[in-house]
Image (cartoon, rainbow, N blue to C red; front, side, top):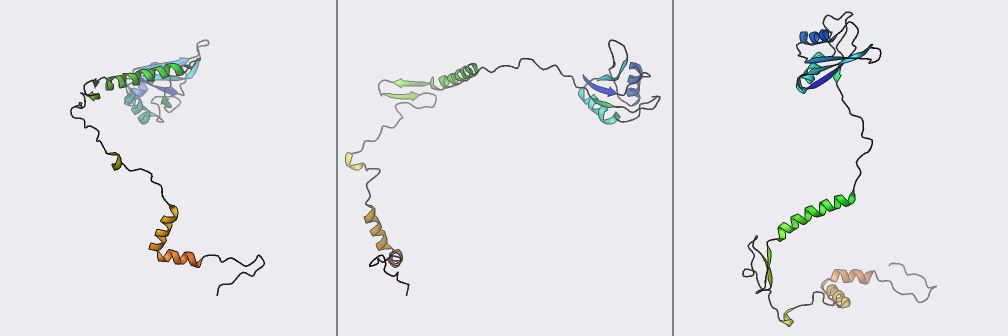
Length: 198
């Protein structure tokens, strides 16, 4: 069930009058509850109208809201909104327990990995681990290749940088010429005149 809040309710309106007004507008209300002051009994000026479902309440809000209330004297318009029922806030918000969260995550992942590795077996004859789940056994694993000492190369051989530069400059005449042209010629003394380009 769903409810709408209806405002601008006066003393000339009662529950049956409001239900009949909705019926004339083509909407079926299940019940109406007019709110009064519990001590004085005076009208609070609003009521709650209950509908069979949220779709009916939303349809009524779109079709009826703002239209004239039939037989209302003086003339009034429907003033409708969605009813908001809120509970008071919880005085003590839930506290976080990091240790419990950690243990929950640890237990979850432990179960996952335990299930994954439960199929691995150690074969004492071959000395290899095998998993029946993926079809790996010691028989179909490849043995590591054996290399002679001289076949293995040093992954980081020493490089003579000067030799490499000489080789590169011999292959590139253009680079060599550019380096020779830009070379600074030493002066005879600190007070010597700097030569100009001729």
